[in-house]
Image (cartoon, rainbow, N blue to C red; front, side, top):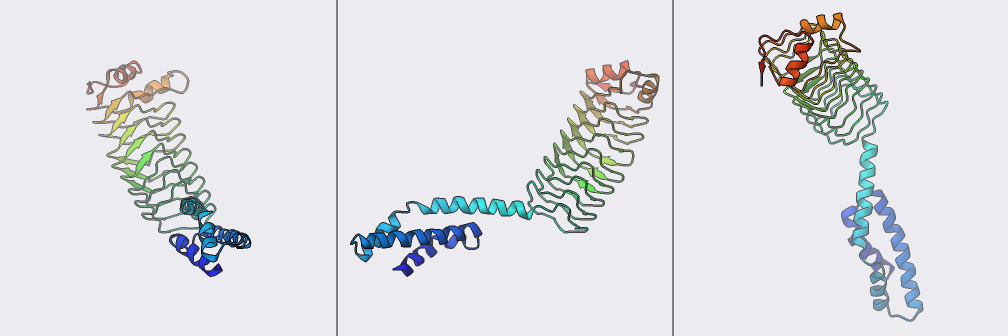
Length: 288
């Protein structure tokens, strides 16, 4: 009869073979069922009655097994995506799903994350030079204090992504909508932005000197306390955009504002009025 109990559990647990915690549950349950069966036999029950009553005593075990299996798989995924302090240059992560992955303090130079879903992942203090994030989902990711030189972000999903205090020389963002992205305290003079939409992006304390942002869209963007000499917004669209100075509007900041090119840009009335008050050259701007 012990074999009959074993066969019964084998059938119930078959869909979860290989899940460690489920295997442990199965062993514990078999021991409990054998004990229960012996008690019923001692009470005078025949073999068939004792077997049926033993099985009935465990109730709907399949729901419990499913919950244990799901929890176990979740924990296994968390272990799998912990690559902190790893040496993984030129690794292939293209198309992977790694929610809340941990790549802190890792060497990922030249690695391929194209099309990967990295939602909620952390890459803090890592070497990510020349990495490929084309088409990757970087929602709620932390990429601060990294070397992102020459990394590629073509059509990446950037929502609440934090790039603060990172090296971004030669990094390229093309065809991207940046939503509530943080780009604080970064030298962006040699970063490339092409065909982007900036929605709620924070550029506070950045150096954007000489940066070309022509033809791109800026909605609710803050360039506060940033170096903005000779930035070009030619043909761009600016709505509710802020250019607040460090402390007060010094002569130096007035001179910086005057070097910005807004030719053929389209602005809302509030952005236009704020820039006009700072002395920006707006003679070729359209106000809507």
